[in-house]
Length: 472
Length: 111
Image (tube, each protein chain N blue to C red):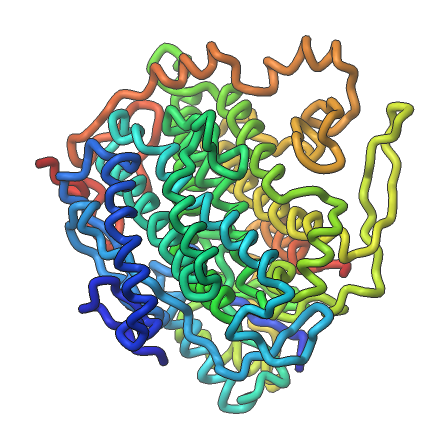
């Protein structure tokens, strides 16, 4: 079990006290991070006391501590999950060899790019969500937002630690650049397109955490299999925190759907009482789910094949042994692709080239589960309408379906049909304006905006009407 | 190493109901007769989606979905895992079949 140093300027379980050079580098970066938080984080709430969970260790059960804290004073730390020193590589070409504790020279650039791409998403989401506190539906939800934000900040620390420790001057430059790129900045945007989208309301936020953070879960899970042991252990611990973010999104969208369903059952028109109609929620689900799928990269990808072969990224739960061939050499993946004559045909590609698609399959199955859960609530309430997950081909801007038009059922359609119909499938400006108009700040403990049902229970055994945020 | 897996749900609801303790105890009980994971691997799983029926525990590839699991049920589950006992029927069939199927679909990788 690693030793956790909570007294250090940067809490950690990576032995920072014994590494002066690294400590100096991180302590030099720390004030820049705080400055970034105070400038581009949820700046208008920096003086408020938030009831937050803070990571204080990596052991199962009791790894976190809850208390009131001002966000700029949050103890962002560096934690790696414990693991065996003699871990072996369990997939790819180097199967059976010892996992690496240093970066192999030949994989340096690719590993750095993976870490930077992952790291860049963490501050990006904080920037995207920075104004939502002004229209929070409850104190409970406001706390959830800030919990997600500070933990995304900690995930940035996790990636910066890897860069500063293992990538020398290049890593230090990359760490700086992650604070210089900004979400939506025309001149210096975040790396992945979806992390430049606007998040202007809480339906956006909950869809973001339900779908985009779920993509994050799968990316982290594939990195948690990595042969580069510090990356694997770092992302394993990030996954423990990420679970709460996914729950926030899944439950948040579910509570909005439940509230709408309850109002419909009472015979009320959701639009007349500040709630969000199901068809509008469906459009948001379509938008965020499809945007999230783009983050997985191309379904047929030589980059993905190489990352697997090198042992940098594994399949979801690779180490559980649920796959037949840990080298993935003797199988093909069936991919449905559009043809030039306007049809769809099945094509077989080597499994290694389909690693992004395999990960996407696991993600889609997970998303089906959460939509199924929302629909069970509607059924219980007695509402027949359902939320549906659009087909993986719909509204794609990356991968084999980019450049083609499909309807939400996955049928290839022509440009004219798309032009005519797409406003029925994706949020329009009017939809956005309507949803934004529902966003009224509610800060009385235990009270909730009319478009969202209360949660079933509070945080950390606290009651729902607990004062989760104390305004200064 | 075996490919037989036992997953204990650690979703929000199951965790609140004590799935962390269930996991620890189950792992310790199984280690008594299978210290090197030669017969089964005990792992945590993020969320099965059968939150109201938690704590949920699954066996794969057996495709057994146990719900409402408490620490008191663990000796029977362990007997089933070990092969000394039958499937614990009182803990099965609690969640909707389509929820179970989604989980098996996720685990039934053709690769």
